[in-house]
Image (cartoon, rainbow, N blue to C red; front, top):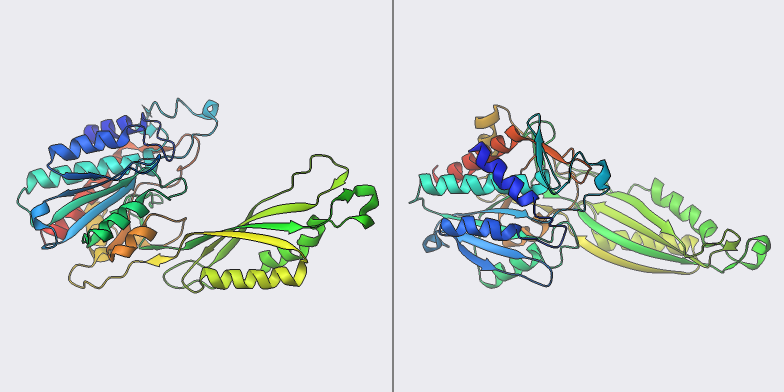
Length: 385
């Protein structure tokens, strides 16, 4: 089985699916799922490929539905010269598989597919539905991906009880960290407007860089919100500052500042914007502001005491690795922010995250097999217990 998982992972990595392009990955997955009698619904929008696949349609809305969610797109490889090999020609060296997307998250996709396949072939008469939500628009702007699939599912009144997202959550050992929520993300583009002039006649100009320094200092020092037992504290990061002036002897007429807030459920984005506007008016005479909410914070709610997904996943991990995972909701956004709208219980569980988005992204081949076994155990614990 390990070799089959490795082969599928390598096959997916060979598709240069830089977000939002799928580059043929989903056709590979769909071919396998069709042989297992999954019903496939393609939801392709603009440059994004999406599909919803469900098995055991006769039991839809009668028994529990477990969804595996993931993405086939990857981030760009960066400087290819620094890679041990071509990032889209995976190689194995000392039992380490190298390639863009092996951890985030093509290896997890392979583990999911084979876990589902083994379960269906082993228990063909199980009571319930296995399903997949797969997109190629997770690493880019997420406008035409999982959010669109969820819209369709809600329109069709599809029921999802449990969802396992294959994001790379593990730290050192597969399954040592799992997540059931994420902070929200607010992106801000702030233009500070001054008066352009010659550096030698600064009294005739108004330098927006100088104007903004007290504001930036307060932004950096301000505590935007405390953490709680579920989500890390709200954090502000200035990601870029620039002007369009090339010469060294010109005071710019304006500068653009890019800011990101990762915020928890102790504060909402409207409150952040209100506080930011107050600070701007305190220091800056003239400015323009644009903002985009990438996602609100979410925390999976467990109403089903009999089948609590956190407990099921913990039990499954313990049965394979003999330890209990830590529930820690750090990191960036995930497509869980869209899936939560279905009311499903959500857990994120995947491969090691130490090399994701980096040069020489890699995974130990045995980790693929361990993740497959955990996924398989989760399926069994949901449908057979």
